[in-house]
Length: 256
Image (cartoon, rainbow, N blue to C red; front, side, top):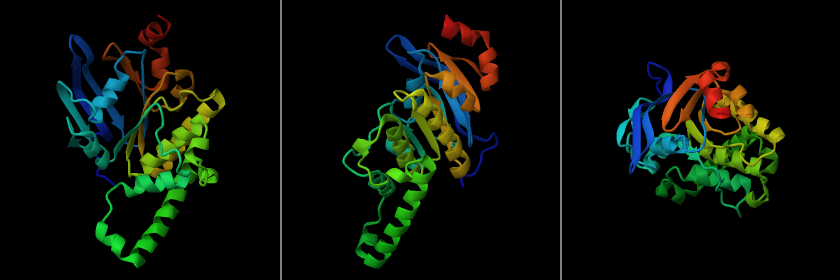
């Protein structure tokens, strides 16, 4: 397990600022994602939510401010380096290898963590490792609820299952923090709740944290430990789901 830092945050940003020309997309954003939590990032379109995740994961470089992951300053690191530390993001449109089976998709994600080329030459060790990987992959598929689909090609899965496959692949890569962009977008309300139930279960079983951008707050709020509300590049409110629901600023943004 990674050493917990003093405040129990797995991700902390301090005064994160990003401009695009004259537009301030992020205006001094300070956010903490607690270890082993589901932290929800909400707000209208153009509030800066996706830009925030892009800056944290190295897709964009900030103009000012700091990003700390597991107490390590990762500000401005390239995405592959952020990913290899255990901070993964899944996109709005899931991108598995469509012709591979669900199981193979998870195994590929495991492998991409850096294969030792010499090990492949030693057949016996390779066979044992393969067996261990398959067992580990099945455990992950079970926890995300895809174990009965293990031999399906990914292109046969529905929207919700595809999103869970993205989560499975991130977990297989060793992720400790997953940034999810609209995990229930495009899924029906019944399955949408099940996705969040799964995330809660994954969090408690595997000790991972989630930073979730979601528009459907009617479904997402009750599963969140902490909520940050963004509007026009700033954090305008934060707290528990209950506090956020009672916050007049939030009502104003959403009901305007």
